[in-house]
Length: 245
Image 1: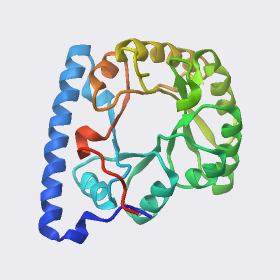
Image 2: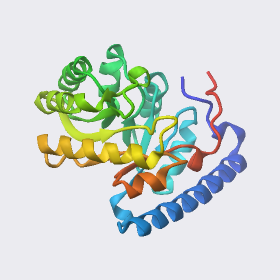
Image 3: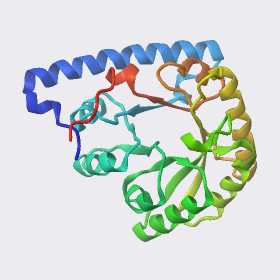
Image 4: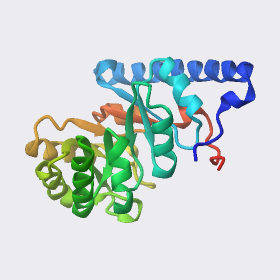
C-alpha cells in the first residue's frame, strides 16, 4: 500500500506541505545552477528525479504541480500502487532500487526507466515483460564502482556485456549507466569511473547518454563528472521516515 496521503490531514496541512516542497525545490535549483556554472554546463542538461520512496502520493502530485516530471521509487510494492493512483498525471517513473526477476513484470508495466539493470537474466525478464505489455522500457546498466555487488551493480569489466544484452533485447532501450558512490570512496573519483563506463556503453549505442549519478549529498561532484540525471530525496522531501503500511 502507498503511505498515508498528507491530504488526509486537511487542506491547511496540504498547503503547508506544498510550500515546503516549493522552497526545497527552489533551493535545489540554486544548487544545481551553481554546480552547472562551476562545471561549465547548462542547467538544461540536468534531469531532476524526485525520489519519493516512503512519501505519499500527495507529495508526488504536489511536486508535479510545481513542475517536476520525473519520479524515482525503489520498491515495487510501493511504486506500483502510486503509479496506478497517479495515472492521470504526466509522469516519468524511474525504478531505481535493486530488482528481483519476480518483480520484473510488474515494474515493466509502469516504469519508463529502470536504473538498476545489472545482470543478463534480469534483462531477459524485463524484455519479455515489456513485450508482453506492449511497451518499451529504457534500461541503465547499474555499475558497482568498487566491485561489491551485494548492493547491486555489475563490476566495471562486466558493463559492456550487460549493455550489449540490453541493446539486443526487443522491448528494451539501452539508455546509459547508473551508480551510487561507494562508502569510503570520494564521490568525485567514483563518478569519474562512471563517466568512463558511459563512454564504453556509448560505443555500443551512441545515444545511450544517460549518466544517473548524484544524490542530495554529492550532486555537485556528480554534475562536475557529467551526470545527466540526479536522484534527489532528502534535499527535496526532507528526512525520510518509514512508510506507513
